[in-house]
Image 1 (cartoon, rainbow, N blue to C red):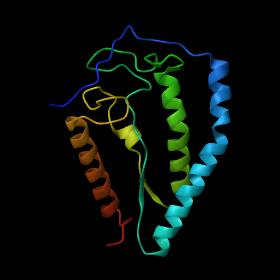
Image 2 (cartoon, rainbow, N blue to C red; image 1 turned 30 degrees about the vertical axis):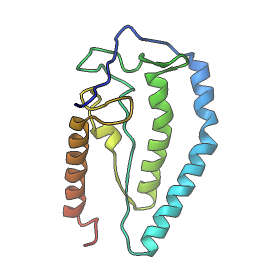
Image 3 (cartoon, rainbow, N blue to C red; image 1 turned 120 degrees about the vertical axis):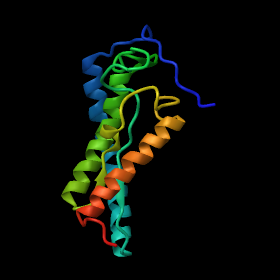
Length: 156
């Protein structure tokens, strides 16, 4: 049986905007290190005639209302000091940096973080997928891969 994460619309927390801005800024060196690792992987693949496709990381939390439970995913209390909006903003720094890198370096990417609907139907917790979620992820990646292939961006 597939476990579906039970969200409670009453479990909310607000974050100090100053704290959030300062914390997100403190992630800049970590994001830069992440992109250096991505660049290394990208160049290794390309040197070996492999076309990598980078995929952003989706999570349930962030902006919007969960259609299953009616929970505000931005205000959801993920932990005592972290709400859904803050959690999403942290991850989004990495996702945005990845997309910027792929665009600048003519590398391929799939923005799964934007394409996968934010619904607890698809998540067994904030990041892992239910069976329905796994099927949805597979369908999205298949469609995006097909689109990249039709645009001749993937060498056969």
